[in-house]
Image 1: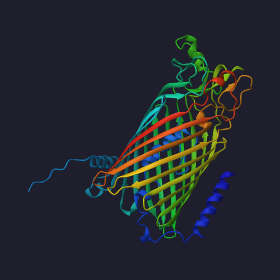
Image 2: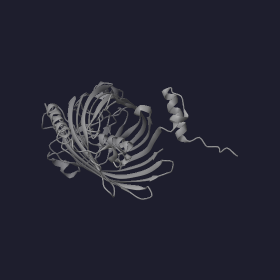
Image 3: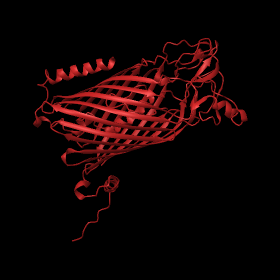
Length: 75
Length: 427
């Protein structure tokens, strides 16, 4: 089952990041750059929503960043 | 001393309207915590579809970091879309999907059905709040309606922070239910398009004999598992795995395939038929890196599904700020996909009919790229204005099917060019 395989990969990565890489990261007072709005993973949600709609309608893939969801995409 | 009269602004009006909708009262303290993003976008393909989409999205942050997001999207679509049939050395006549009337396509032209016209209204709501220590939960819903289509969905998410909030694990689930009710009804798979005089008394009976029902539906379940890791002061990384399974009516009722003889000449047009289930897996990775000169946003997605479509997507943006608060952000996106196993550019009379077939180039082998640029500027009072202009190019490719006879002399894989133009105003 590919879903089991996929979950295994995610859990393994999570485990590695949670244990081996717990030295990664910053102290709370070092978040000056990360706290900027432009550093958010989805810094322009409206652009992302419009792009998702275009590419969902014009290509055979959707989702990844967030839910693929329903929709027609007929044209 | 004179009191200065201030004009009611759009933000105040929208805040009042939103509060009225939510049954709340308008209070001076809460007025400032609504943030609105508005955008109007135009997507225009050369000689084909044109779509205009307007969005207004509001975000209100309450005390205790509770966040409410509401979004209204309206879009209008007009223009011509490929009907799936191949070009021919002679003109071709097709019946409109509704059964009312016909259209003629010139010799050598990719057949386009120019009757597409639709308006869609979509409402989205999402509530996000902290829960216990280090947990964040979120729940939302979405409803969209257009003339022949309805989609409704709900979702729920939970996230937990670790390591001084440097690591976040999240999982989410969504369920969507869609109903399609195309004008003219749902065609019978592989039924031949009836082409004749729609005013003829026998036409209606013949047309109706190619229909199985007036509407059909599909349901989608999405699961999303993600991990976000702060690497250092400049860098953050996200990895997601998503699983999506959809069952129900996945065929495009407007698409046909050309059934050709040994000379490649179209004899009939058969309505396409896709499997009624599809399961997708997507692996998505993204990083943002804060350089001294700007911010890099790079992502990669690999998707694979049981229709045998594999796709790779690379998306890179680089935000370059200027001292006066203006910025530019160049963007490039590269996409490639393999064909669905049942994709065929045409059907041959010499062969028996397959179980499933579609000539929709969007599930064929396809490469696309997008290049664009965004230009943004502050407008005072924390308001922002931005312009985005992008060029999108599609190169459909052969999945290895050999063209026969007359099909060797026509373009089976026509390229598509589109322009995306957008204005965004945030206040």
